[in-house]
Amino acid sequence: MKNKLQKTGVTRRGFFQWTLIGFGLVASAGAIGAIASQLLKSLMPSGWFSKPYVYRKVYAAPISEIDKAGSSILFQDKANHRKAILINNGGNIQAFSLTCTHLGCQVFWEKEEGKFLCPCHTAIFAADGSVESGPPERPLEQYPVSLENGLVYISFKEPSWQPEQYFKREGL
Amino acid sequence: MRNFFKERIGITPKELKDKIDEKVPTALVREFFFALGGIPMICFFIQFVTGLILGVYYMNYSGELTNGLSATYISIKNITYEFPVLSYIRGVHQLGANIMIVSLFMHMLRVFFTESYRKPRELVWVCGMLLFFTTLGLGFTGYALVGDQLSYWATQVGANIAGATPVMGPFIKRLILGGTEINLYTMPRFFILHVMVLPLLVLTPLMMIHLFLAREHGISYTGGKEKSYYSLVPDHIFNEYKILWVLICAFIAIVYFFPPTLGEPANPFITPEHIKPEWYFYPMFHFLKLVSFRIGILATMGVFAAMTLWPFIQTIMEMFIPYKIVRVIAFICGTILMIVCMLFTILEALI
Image: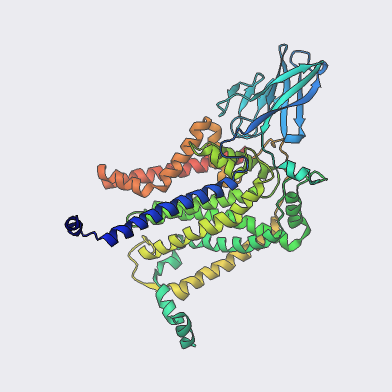
């Protein structure tokens, strides 16, 4: 054994030194990784992979305002900066988000043409939310609509974590 | 005096001068196109000083106050309209950013078309491209801090572009926004990126590496066989110093006639009808209108990657194709990219 070690030029002292250095490097890499992941986690207040959205039901309008085919109502939910449009598409009441699925600009509802136009990259969506032209690949997001006692409710999809709450409760 | 420095820091001023001095071709004084790289650096210095002063007055709360405006917007409004000197400083800061990018474009064009990126200067080019992207990032994070409509929607679009990056996109988006959407913690992140991360932790080290590498290989003057030289210290540095003053005077004069303005306050419910980013993003902005989302993002990233790695791509091409043809290909690619960018910029400006 000794001869073998001597042949390879590795002494017992050297072997233990390198083993210790190896352990030290692995341990410090682990510690650095753990600290770095915690630092990065601190920069991700909404979590790494946590479910980012929840639904919140908001009263939008009485059914009498939207019961005619082709009628529409714009609705702003100031609490979470959400804007939606309620459209009666041939008796079917639908709610669409007005956020363009391309890069997040707010689309305009052109009532006379029955189309949504995006001012940023000139996308056009049809009244049923589907893409008519332009760069978006997905239709406008649809929010669930529910009818209760003649009142229309929209279930807005919003982030589960909103920092505004911490400021609002302090009166800001 | 010499001994004072020698004994304390181990080097005399004369020795220091000899150490950092180098020969600069005299032709650079006549053909300034070959020394354009100095202007972005001078602009960075101006940006640094004006940015420091603006930072003192800047407030970083994007939530609505009782009057419906954000503290950010009010602070920029005060800087722009209430304090006369500050409005100059903001104007110079804004103009400096634009001139920094213009001079970077010119510098890049000169380096590309004179093929100064060839061996052994490939890494100088790569480093320069990274500097270019960092400067664009600084421009972007800078106007995202203003708190007006352009600022808000630029943040929105920029974050979604970052979010479309393959694999890491959603993670990057959440990291820069501080959540899944723009929120109160978004602006401080952009502020830190703009004043600390990009200028001090990214741009400054990159600039030092760029300068170090450029010094290592010497200035690539290809205008002819230059035999006469002058010294970097103090002659060339004095020339740059003169340019600094020319720029400062020009900036002040321009800002006098075109004072900085401020748009409508940010409104998350309405995207303005004719919204556009700053002019240096026009080519990308226009391109994104023409093609589908994924193609737009991937093609832009592909072009950026090809631009950054061009010296190596050219070297690989030269293994298979004769040198002269590769030069023509490089020239054609550069010209096409330049013309397309100019065309998109003009088209976007006319809309």
